[in-house]
Image (tube, rainbow, N blue to C red; front, side, top):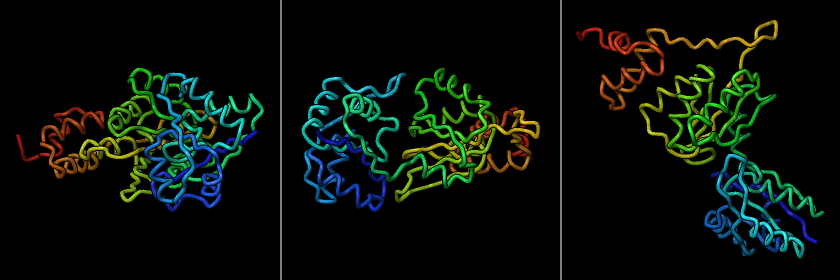
Length: 289
């Protein structure tokens, strides 16, 4: 009877692989990978010849269920020898089908061993500048607007730090929904963690909305959102995040410097700040009638 190893792999920088992870990947009889193409690049780089099989699934409203035949095939392999599980990047079992495999392996009496390593979740959190003592992981935010807003509304009064993953083509829409449901609270947007173009955008939700109105979101994103503030009596209270005149003017100028037309820049800042578009235009372009 084999052991199921949950092996964390780099989220970008290949130097983040651990010596223990390399040994387990070499010694295992089979590697179950969420993305075989990414896995083979990693294994080729470290000269690991262990056979690889695909173990992936599409996200649904109830998690990441993998096809039953593939699950059974891996369990049969596990009955004979050790199997290592890797996700596309980072720690398996978080927002991928590894969870179901772990449950099935434990139900059949197999030993399950984690091999810790890289994780976008913890990397973004510890560098965010937001409270790290307690947090709530939301996984990937729902693709559909209504479902996304429903999830965000359910944690609107949550005092702990919130963490979520998001795809680049939905970042702008998600930031709009965060502003609508959670308010203009403190936020850190972590992009392309450990990679060449790693970037942290720290500020408020509206700061991030303004930034990505002028810059096309690219890469992989982790959003770290400050929890709901509480007053001295322990009751939740609103964040202070008002847009003063100077901030409105600076936001419009940033957009225009990025090539956005002045009327469009005023429109975007009005939407982000909650101010009237005419008022934003008057503040940013006082010499125009």
